[in-house]
Image (cartoon, rainbow, N blue to C red; front, side, top):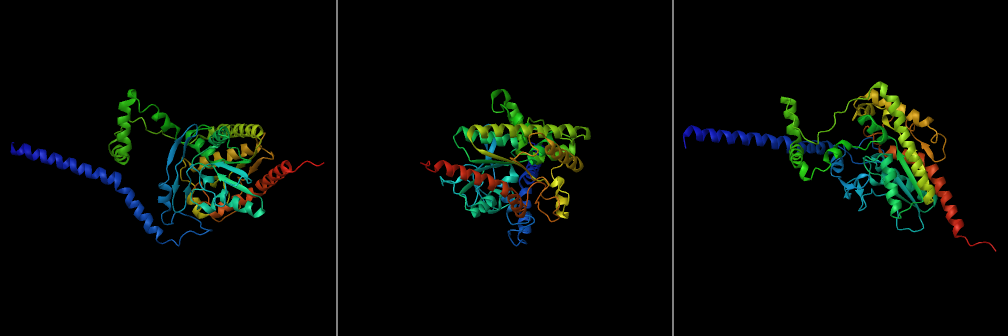
Length: 401
């Protein structure tokens, strides 16, 4: 072969090798470095405590969250995969464990808790989730209860009602169903600009029929985008090149000021409709229900320095987030069928006067915050459970002669 041509071939493959090496480093070298940094920060931690202000610096916490995964679920779109980590245990049913719960106790009053990651209690240990604290406090009353945590990451109130429906169709009927909602209903609307949306819908629309023959080329483009996300992102930033893929996410923009009042009403209208549906199911199946509107950092009046630093995470516009969430809560407090109802518990202002940090990020509470929520829920839950116990006892008593 002509020497110059041979040299050109060698130079070409050397260039290809350098490019591949850069791609490998960009795609697979960044995350190990980040893990090492978290590990080094975690070495300085004294470990978990009941009054921890943040779990971000605890050894392995981020890895514990990152190791959790989801499986497909009909109607609700996803469900937690079984997992056992240093802080979190998800059982074979895809449910986070509630410590102290004996679900095999046939005589226990069954309490099912539905919600998103704030009830799953991302960032807290198994013993410090809201359902675990409720279980412990109810045990102290002497009433035999079994509290099950049916919360799933990212679920909104519509998914929770569907979750209850699926259980009822299988004959799995609780005595009391608690719905802990608010944040995901608002957060998804903040990002999509519409009410009653499900997290990541645009991705699932793009994935529709992707494995069929008619979308084979789209699958190839999606595979390249999924395998080399960081490389393609940097190419786009440096050159303006846009790799066309069916999985490109929608470009979200902050809500316009004029859209806030209307969207706030639509969010509450969707939530109120879910409350009506759950109430109807409860009447039909003879169960009790309690609807709890959760607190949020965006509307917390007194914020610590740490909370102010975290408040804007995931926000398209912090000012719009504050205005929108406040508008939703104001609508919620005035909505007919919600205001003053016996099965409604409004905890949106629970932490307004607390200046100490009760959030570990823009959505999730510290273990102390979870305990405070459980204590605020306890009187209503205990009253319902006590009434259920009296009713069951009366049914078992022999008739008087």
